[in-house]
Image (cartoon, rainbow, N blue to C red; front, side, top):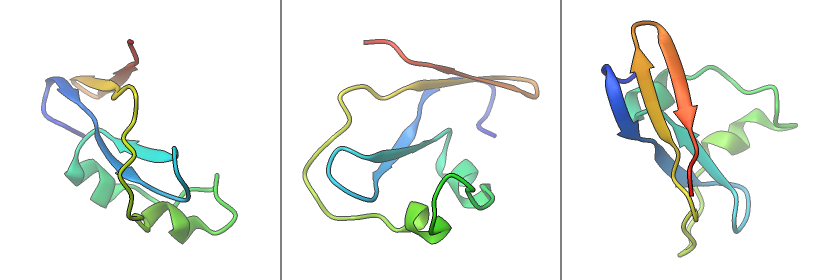
Length: 73
C-alpha cells in the first residue's frame, strides 16, 4: 500500500477508449495479484496508447492497514 496519507491514485489506459485502471501507487500496481474480473486477466496489465484522460482521478487514503478510495467531482 501507499504511505499513510492521501494521494491521487495512479492511472493507466486499458482495453479501449474511456477505460482506465487505477491503483494506489506504482508499487501497489506491481504487487497486485491477477484480476478475476477480466476474461483474459493479462489485458488489465497491457496499457494502450491514446490521448484520453479520466474525468476524475480518485484519491487513496491509507491509515494503517485500511485503504479508502475517495471519488469526488
